[in-house]
Length: 499
Image 1 (cartoon, rainbow, N blue to C red):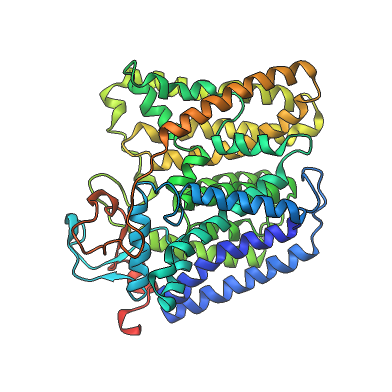
Image 2: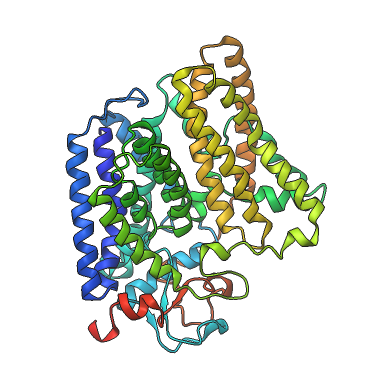
């Protein structure tokens, strides 16, 4: 597989659920418009990729060998079983009550999924629609509408494993040639970005000393380990990893922005917050490149219209007493900050300083030493600003936005760190130091991950209850409905009489 093949596979994988949604949930006008721009932008991307020059020194290899593909595929499948993507293996996380029930709803109910008389939990006092990140579920649901529920868990496992395989393939291609690939994967999965073993100390200290700053501010970063993300929310892991790798390669390495907006728009159906955080990186790179090749018809038409459709869909979300239905209201400043302002400020400063300060300073020293690294230095400064801003959201009550922002920027920092580590291998002193340090980091990373991961016996998709039954955990579905009487429901969505 070449990098061109991987780019085409990536966009194809991301656009499939978008097309399913466009064709089955939208009214004829918007379905036709969405289909036309999707096909046009995809075809333009395919043609451009075929003609493009992909010979860049940053790539690990020019072409991935069949044996490497096989090893990577087997590794991905084994990891998927270990984390029970399809209800196999050790068990699933608590989030899969939601995953499996939503899949069942999508299979058994006609599209769009509407709840006309639902009043559960006091938030659905008007007609509602299922309003969640459905890209992870739709391919399984649409197939099982024809073949039944029996294969649903297997199909969900396969679909999730494909996305994880794509993210690992990007990691392989973008890794420096002189670094052991096994080490890269271990560090990536453990979230061990070379200079942060102290982060795991909060797991050791939480039963010894009660410090609100430890769990309150550090936890979002701890939960963003890739192992944990795969286990709890594979759809978010897929979006953040694939999104960062693709944007970094296209905008930063190739300096080509002609499909960036279109690409980010495809992420919205997977994870709105994940797409937003990837979009911040993409937006910075587009500005940094002075909008070079950004204003293409395929980019503006496909990306603009799909973004409009998905934004309209997610803006219809209900609001309740815990969360807002949209991103800007997720930070409740009346939370922990005003209860203990001194602790909050100390924790925030410590979080920014210790979490990123050491290894960002090291990368700065390296990237400022050579003229050829000036681009990376600019990107590094952006990472610093991003990391300082992102914990501000954690001052509030909700942590979802903070987790997506932090896990996304950590992936970009990891890519930069790989380049820095590759340069350090040229120094024998640095190499000996890093070997000792990474052993320490990996040991703590394994301990941290294993003490955080939790497996439960979750009903399979076929055995999951329907949303209108009272045996579903209440807190799971409070934020997964949207208003039918909204701009999306009134003007974009397919009417029930059209089914």
